[in-house]
Amino acid sequence: MESPSLDDGRHLWRLARDSGLDVNSPYAYVLWCRDFAATTVVARDHTGALRGFVTGYVRPDNPDTYFLWQVAVDPAFRGRRLARRMLDHIGDRVTERGIRRLEATVTPDNAASRALFASFARDRAADLSWTPLFERGHFPAGTHDAHEAEDLVRIGPLR
Image 1 (tube, rainbow, N blue to C red):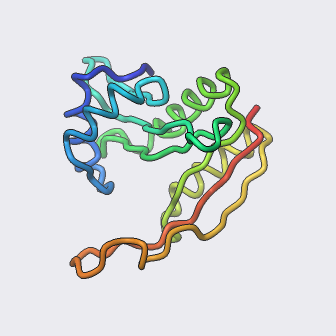
Image 2: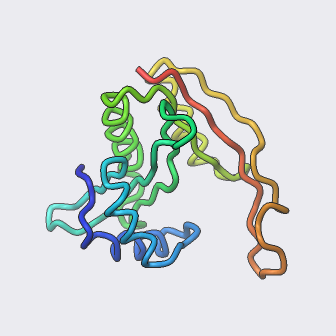
């Protein structure tokens, strides 16, 4: 596990697309690798190919909170606990910086992400709470794939 380089931006975009995540512009992923490399982790296979990533940032108005933006795992590498290993790695990294809480948003039907965050909180002996945050109406209407609501998960204090 390591921080991304600028060259990884295009690979983050591809992996987000192939993983079924909300895909942002390729520019956003390259910019992410520059401006948020310290709060992002990438996982590579034995050939050096990117197989997973976790992106996130320290909330500007709440500097003791890390917001996890996206977790992606190459479909061919699912079922190997890669998402959890990346989450543990970034959790250790941000805790070393004095960050005490982790937040993320998850759709109500995303059982895999909910289980991932629950096990992370349990193993770190941290409190876990879920509250509604974004409703469907917060996202653009009229698209064929309207965005689902998202719940906020808060984990902390991190240990």
